[in-house]
Length: 224
Image (cartoon, rainbow, N blue to C red; front, side):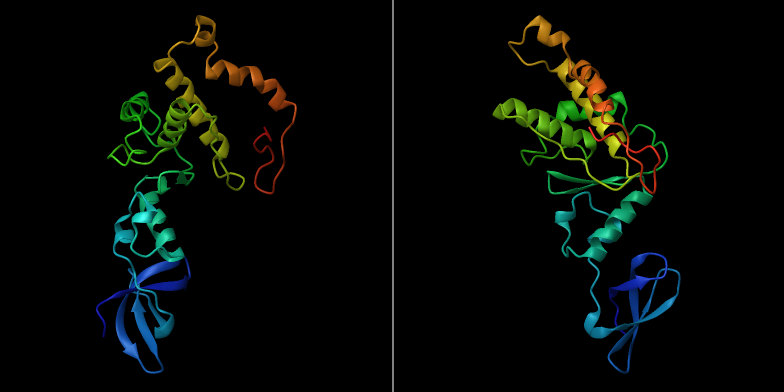
């Protein structure tokens, strides 16, 4: 028997699940046991070793030693079980899972303050707060100021994934960010015309596009 872990593909409930190799069978197969004790037979030539890092859940998928579909999914699943719904893929990409519940403190004023104070630390490679919607928003804000170039944040996902909520949280952060770090040289009228007010002013135009109906949501996010 081999004392190593491999992925159990096509697991009945978890798609991929790490399992311990219990025995090497005839015919080029491995007998693998999952965490509940259920046994599976896997072709030895198709067995993929488990990267130990994904078993504990890293906040940046690029730090995994083996970037496979199984490792990615399991890493995100481990973090989700611990209410860590955000996982990064390098600094520019953020994977977000809808928790379908309120996570205390996730969007608190203290949390916003921590990301404002961190500034561009994470973008510069220095240690900073964990990946979050706020880290993406702050990176875009800092880059806009530093490079004087418009920035875009693309939020994509299927219906019900939480795109609208993510958009609201990012806009709220940027509105607060602007209030606490107004651009030097801006006029009083510019200071009064906050990001929040500009979004509210644009809302009637966005509303005019109407809503979309999907198989999962009768009142999906507005096209704007």
